[in-house]
Length: 219
Length: 334
Image (cartoon, rainbow over all chains, first blue to last red; front, side, top):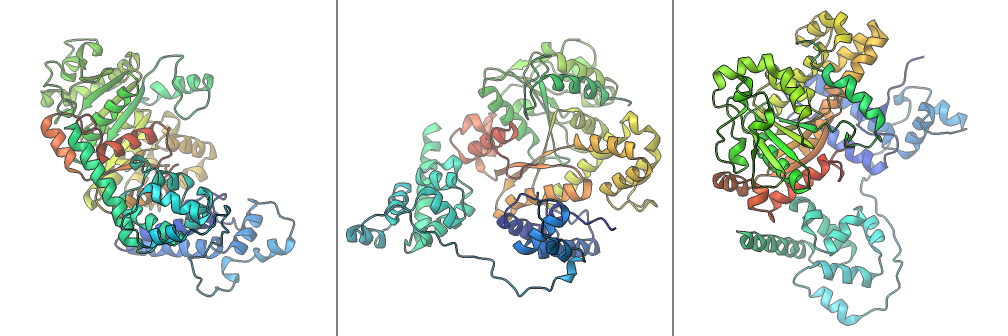
């Protein structure tokens, strides 16, 4: 019997990863072996890269679908499963499954606010007319909207530590500004704060000004 | 050069069996310093920057640190550490003017950090270093320091590769440019084959390994990871030895002079390619931004983390240090 390939290794993952990890790994692998990639140009020629990209597509075809992934895990012995039907489904080649319709990758996460807070028209107006964004303001709006840090992290698909670092304005624990802007926009959209891009810019500018001031003090 | 690797591999394994299995447990029983080697395969990638600032931050954590400049042809680690050109350097030890390496150590402005400069006479020293590198490594283990940081020279010479392979932890500095990435892979490739060729248990497979190292070989070896499969098929026990030796090659990748988000991502891609092509477990430890603080600090002849402690550069290097010490998760852990 032909030894089944470990599709997780193709995407540099372990079998305990989440679906989100699989998606990120797939996108990263595609970039790594693309024609103009810096990481692979001196080691692989175009033919070799095409072969690797096909392997990556095949791996994602299975692992990217939760149902197929479950069947694959059972067939490989990564997961316990008593369903013979699932094992039989994977007895054939990967391509025995019909190719699915193109999926929407961005799934909306529905989370119900945990904390019940009364509506405050004055605060709503303050949010609508906000000219700048600070960590304390983000925290106040989050509490007003009734989300815990964990809920907001789940909603925005970020880590709770990152939400806390943003609220407490701890620059050492924040990502590079190119990522930070995107995270702030996602958080503003989740908290229904208008003019997301503009306000995200003010947050980053404030951090940069504080850093400049600190540096000039140390000179 | 036979068995250079075996100086440490057997006795260190015995020692490690006696201490708790933590990622960076101090080997208290024998008080051996942990040896870090900073390489890059190409000049100007930031080896001295990383060596100087990493050593400085280790000393700030309370460790006793020795930084050694092994870039014999272009030693300038002393400048990056804010030390005047020392009178004595590694060349004095190589020429046997002194038998004690500790005599050559110069203190720096950071308490706990000392450094040994490279040689001012590279022409005569480089050839003699080949003969004395085994002695040098033996001497390093006897020094009274917790951490030793080796600033390796540019290129992928046998000397540089041997020091990288024999260190406890290797740090590879890369720029997000095609030339640097290509040279880094060349460095890893050299380290890979050098490690195998020096392993006494794989003596019988030297011809296969040497043939596999040739890119136009007739064995069908398209990448170093193919070689592992061939040897395993020939002899499963040799295959296990092969895997064990490969597991020792685990470079920590640091991307320097990052300007864009794609530059940050390149580190993760390089780790993935290392796993697939070489079959080794590289780790993306962190990145350093392209910043003016770097050249300003060099002109002031001070480490950047000392001169601009509250800068983003200092924060990056601090985070990188924590990731290398295992106190913080790396960007792309093994």
